[in-house]
Image 1 (tube, rainbow, N blue to C red):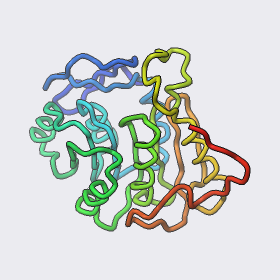
Image 2 (image 1 turned 180 degrees about the vertical axis):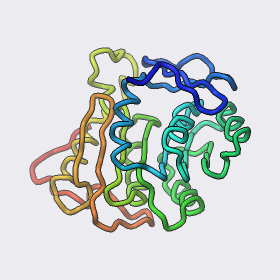
Image 3 (image 1 turned 180 degrees about the horizontal axis):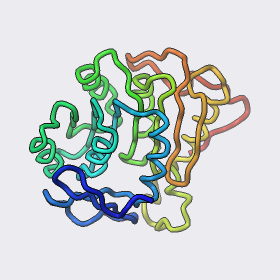
Length: 242
C-alpha cells in the first residue's frame, strides 16, 4: 500500500482524500488531491504500459505531475492546466532542472482542441504517448472534447484514464454540488459503444469506481481535429441521454 506521504527529490508529496481542495501547498510540501489507494490503483494500470511519455490534463498544485515524473522517470510529461499558474510546481521543476522533460501549459482550457494539438506538436512532434490522464473538469462536454483532441496522440496499446467519472452516482457526493451539470456516465456509455463497434479504436475498457481506463486499439486516427467519437459506433435504437 502506498504511504500517505512520499518523497520526490526535494519535496514531500502528501495525498489528500476528500471532495474539497487540500490545504495550500508550499515549496516543501505539495498536495496530491487523491488518496493513496486511488493512486495505487492508477499505478497498477500505468505499470502495464511502462510509460515513458504521459499527457496529464488538470494540474492544480502539481502534486500528481511531480509524482508521475518521479515514479516513472519520464522522458516527457506534457501537462495542461486551466489556471494561469502553479507556482510550487514551477519552482520545483526549475530547481531540479526538469523544465525540458516536464512541459506545463497554463491558462489552457481542456476543450480548446487547436491549442492542445499545437502544444503537442511542439512537445512531442510525430511521436505518441503511452498514457493520458484526464483529471481536469470532470464535466461531460469538456471531457469528451479532450478525448476527441488527444486520443489520436495515444499509441496503440496505450491507456487513456478518465478520473472521477462517477461523481454524480457516488453516495457520498453532495447533492447540491454540480447539480445542474450533465453526468459523465453517458460519455462512458458512448465509449462502450465504440469498444463494441470492434473497429480497433478502443480495444478494452476497465471501470474502477474512481476512474475509467480506455485501451487504445490499432486503428490509425487523424490528429487534425477531425476525430469524433460519434463516427465510430452504431447506436441503433440505443439512446444516450444527458
